[in-house]
Length: 108
Image 1 (cartoon, one colour):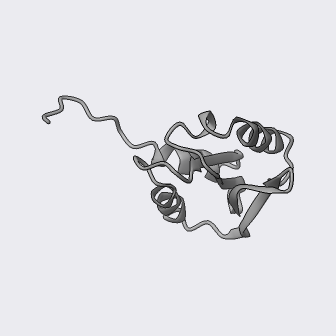
Image 2 (cartoon, one colour):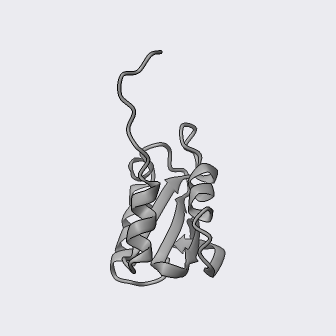
């Protein structure tokens, strides 16, 4: 399909803000078929930030809510188990817990 407009990438903005020290939470549903979490993780890895806390499961009520990895420069990448393209729509309880923990500056 011919397009007359293409949205620019936001990767440059993420890099700019995180290198200035702003905290960032980037998350993806692990069932997203349009933008798989592996693709999101790939552009985050392209920043070459040091890993502060490697991949680990995060839990809610004794069950895995997803996985998370924390990088230097205050960037956290998390997955939502069972989340699709609009990740927070599918597991709302886990989504709220993830957001609340991040906002409270607590580990997932």
